[in-house]
Image 1: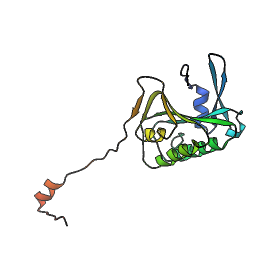
Image 2: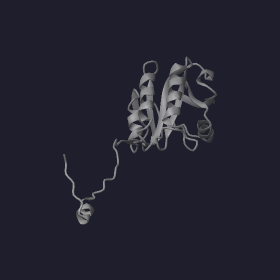
Image 3: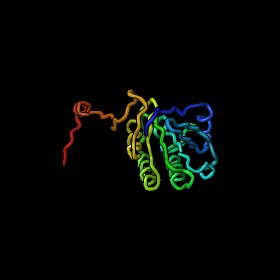
Length: 179
């Protein structure tokens, strides 16, 4: 895709995403420009033909809905609905997430991978990050597009704390054997 990167944020968009409305991008192309309008519908079937589904993955990745944010289970259902809609010609996953839980991550990644069979899927980072679980999910898209040189992409890993009780056990006279 050529041209300038377009920002999609506005108060109406933020409110409708959290209220469960289905977001679409309606594009009108001229000879050297593109105009994008973000609109909300009660289903993807209500959107105009040729629309692009806009699905946001923002904040920590969680399996279930939390504090108004859609979890991976709900987002996977939106992806499947967009993939199955005749009015939707593609899916844009807008990502700004540091990652999150493993639970539910594969479900959303699989939904995106399955959607690719019928529609193009693009993961778009708009002045933010796509790390850890969010990168796992975003890597299921056909393409990853960063809007800025400073966008952070990558860093898959797991954090854990290990405690060494060897000194404590020795002090208490507790011994063990490996079998």
